[in-house]
Amino acid sequence: MKKTNLLTIMVMLWAVSLFSQTAPNFTITAADGQTYQLHEDFLQEGKTVLLKIFFTSCPFCISIAPQTEVLYQEWGAGQQDVEFIALSDKSFDDNQDVADFEERFGLTYLGAGSDGGALEALVPYKDGRFGPFFGTPTFVVIAPDGTVNFNIRGNNNPATIQLLDEAIAATGARKPSPPSTYNINGRVVTEAGNPIDGVQITIGGNIASQTTSGNGQFSFEDISETTDVSLQLDKTGNPLAGVSTYDLVLTSKHILGIEPFSSPYRHLAADVNGSGDVTAFDMVDIRKLILGLNSEFADGKVWRFVPECVEFPNPNRPFENVVDTCSPQGLLQRDYNDFDIIGVRLGDVSSRGVIEQGGSQTRQEKETWPLRLESETAPGAYQLRVAVKAGAFRDLIACQFGLKWSPEDWSFKGIEWNTEADAIPIQRDQFNITEEYDMGRLMVAWHDVEAREVKEGTALFYLHFSSMYDSAPTFGSNYPVQLDPSIAPALAYRENGQALDIQLQQSQTSNSMILSLFPNPTSDMLHIRFCLPIPQQTEVSIFDDTGREIKQIYSGMARSFWNQLNFSIKEIPAGQYSIRIRNELGSQIRRLQIIH
Image 1: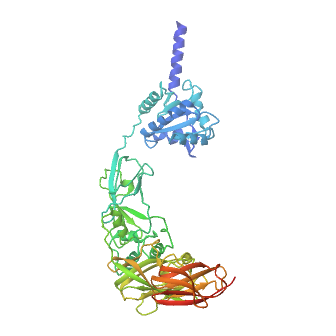
Image 2: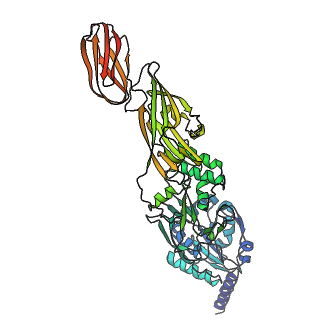
Image 3: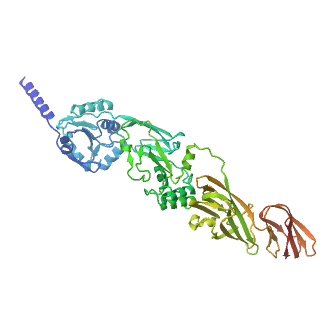
């Protein structure tokens, strides 16, 4: 009887000693590279600490890992009354192994391996002083006063998580209230209110993303107030769409103080280099885009987006003293059911592109401005001078157009400026003067701040070419120089912004025909090239030296400008012959010598 009582008293004393012990201090260097002390950094700061004893290849540790992260988030993710610390009890797990484990399962709480002091920190929890150690995972809850609740374990993972939740609450820790959620709904529109579709909107880094619909609408629902909110908006497209020389007119007038921008969004559109101001450098970048010298603006962006609630106290200086009443940090404090965002297309100062984007403008048939091309040829040297002449224009303030030709046939020799007093002052920097010439292309982008009255037949400039052949070349079309819409549309602008389509009219100053033969003398194949100012019913024949017609080589409707005939003379005896071309314009004869 005495022995039994003594044994009972000893067990009771052991139990009292066991559960009266407090958690000893430890120091670890966690996988995040920071050093932490249990007492100084957590317990003395009033935090409850949950220790997870595990190792990275433990199957049971792996199965419960995601659920521990959910519990950690519910208790404030280390920002409130509770901190979680995972310590590996295996020497083969170092800090990098622990970091890889946490990344693999999306764990955000602290962790340490053998090289971070985990083995030393776990000695008191594995040597039996708090109770038998049954393997991993083992969970320990330590109250701020150092009291240890050891080996909290349920029959399954959910039961274990439930017991851990209760054990943490028993320490006096307070679980944060669930975060509120909010909705953000709105539209992406132009300054005029026209919807913009195809805008990619991402919220909170990469929490949610969507693309605006045809009416420009977007909707994000149930976004937590704890979300690190930031809205990223992007829309791709052709940087040149809606950008024209008329935008250069408006930007020039603003810079010169003639007509300053009245809208802050025009400033944002004109500031294509993102410097925070509108300068001549922005005009250079816009002109280079129109001329095809650059394929995009410096930052590669096509659009800028500004929440409608952002205020610009001084519209003339919108980059100064901006009042952002809806900054991303303050977004999620209430529902936003009308959070509209203004889209601005870079370079499109006149808003032509964004108006068409919104679909509110019905495209009407434009007036046209004719440009006439007049060519002069020198038959001997086969030089070509093309005068680009204007039709009458009441108040021209800007124009842009591209021309193209066949570089295989014509070598471009340069531009001749019209220096007459009433000529439009087109300058060299208003042309694309790069290697485009070698590709048979030329682009013009001219503007001024004062409208001009253009007289009928005013020469804008002259283009000089020489034939790539010893004689006149052949062409696949009726005229060697044509409009080239591949870079930008061919348009002219009146001072009020009215756009006119440019149309080319071609003519040749001489009504005479040009006829050439090569090679001459020839022994095999004869190439006959002739040039006509207008399409003509034409006959081409070969005659011997007595004037007798040997053969009619061609009879039909020949096109305007250059035509080529290829005629085999293998069956014709050697001797002196003549080639005659005849039509309503008259006739021409060239001598030919055949040798075999």
